[in-house]
Image 1 (cartoon, one colour):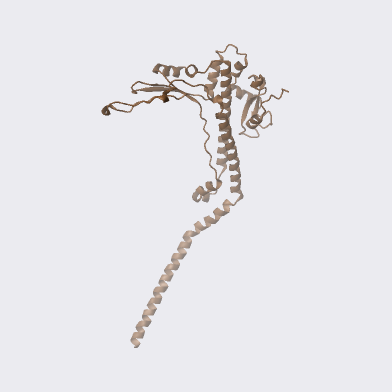
Image 2 (cartoon, one colour):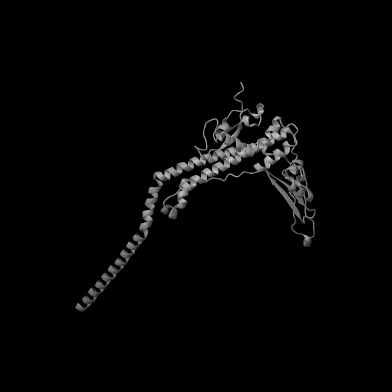
Amino acid sequence: MWRLFGLLTLFAFAVSLLVTYWQQILAVALVGFILYKTPTIIRYFLKRRYFASQEFQQYKVALEGITEEHNQIVAYADELLHDDSFILGISDSGRYAHLATSTNTSEYNYRRDRNVATLGAPNVHNCSLQTVRNAEIEPIKYVVKYFDIEVSEDSLARIEKFGENLSRLENAVDNVNQRELAVIQSIDPPSYIKSHFLVEFYQRLGFYLVPIEIPFPSYSFQYVSAGGNSSQQTDIEFKSETIDALTEWMSERIKFRQSVAGQRALMTKKLREYIKERDGHSCQNCGLSTRQEPNLLLEIDHIRPLSKGGMTTVNNLQTLCWRCNRTKSAKWNGEN
């Protein structure tokens, strides 16, 4: 009897030791887990505190401002790109190609990939190999000839308008890109935000902009051999330099250089820069200058509109910021 009691007592003691052992193990594990998670917990509360801070709110305000400006430039670019002046000329080659179908009827063993001509595109002229090579040597002459750009005062006026609009768009895009870069570079969150919460940081800022790309008009001369064995193409992209060359080339062929159209041809990128320099890089309407706003977008305006008989001369040109230029009435201020 006493022997059995002793055994039961010993067993109970052993069980109590085991329970205490596992409790200690669990306690140690719990403490270790808490120590392991403590930095995460601390960072979580620091994150919440930072996202409610004045610094973060200032970043949001700055980005909201640049986003609004970006959207204004997008709207401005869309407005310019839908202007008829962005279409300089078209080619009639392949004009009715869509009315026919073409099938490779070669025997199976002789079928192969071949060069295929672009037919029916108004900005692609299908031609001989010699014409493609000549267009590379004299691009302006051949664009005018094969894309039906009339050498006339009316055509020159339209090209001048195209160059002016293109310059505005280039300046607007360059300006907003610089402002966005400056704002982005000024954003410098704490290291723990960069290391652990950078994705959430930008999500909370809500900053995403669709890049603004300038779709410069491009005209192509394309040669594809009858069998499709070879092809060659000359592409002419109409940026500011190309437009200036086109206006100069055309103005030389118009006799009445002192006419309104002849004067329009003088509105080149070089002249625009001269007027800005003359006006001290400041808006002649609101007075803002690049000294006050380094990224201020400036444009050249005809004081007396071309539609009212104005001419592209230094005395009839002034510098305006793009906002003042857009809101300026088409009616000449000097006319009753």
